[in-house]
Image (cartoon, rainbow, N blue to C red; front, side):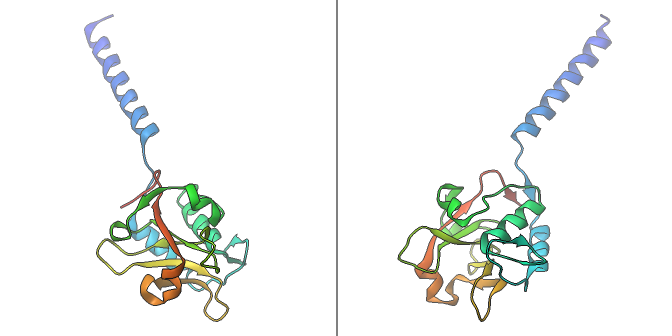
Length: 167
């Protein structure tokens, strides 16, 4: 085989193996602006238990699931599945796109029952977007962690999905 063909084959093999490695080890990336724009479009959609359909409404995990699915990323569908999902993140280190996990309405039951998406950066007041079942002010809305002692009592953790990076 002529030297130039051997060189060309080696370059192709290198490029293919580099692409293949990066593709297999790649982490889905969501642009912060895209995530924020998409969640903002959902604001005001009513709460509907068990739903992932914006025309009908969302429950909390349905909203999180629908949001990440829009970006072709699979996350747990049920809030209880966040018990063992993701990398634990200190609230002081959380960033946009992390998942905040709370108990359900009974704060004494320390199992996940409510989730939202963090929309504040490191060093900012912790804000999240979620679908709330609150009968007076329910549906998809933005809340702050300090907004009410209700959230502090129910807080379990913040997780970062190991297969997602928001930039």
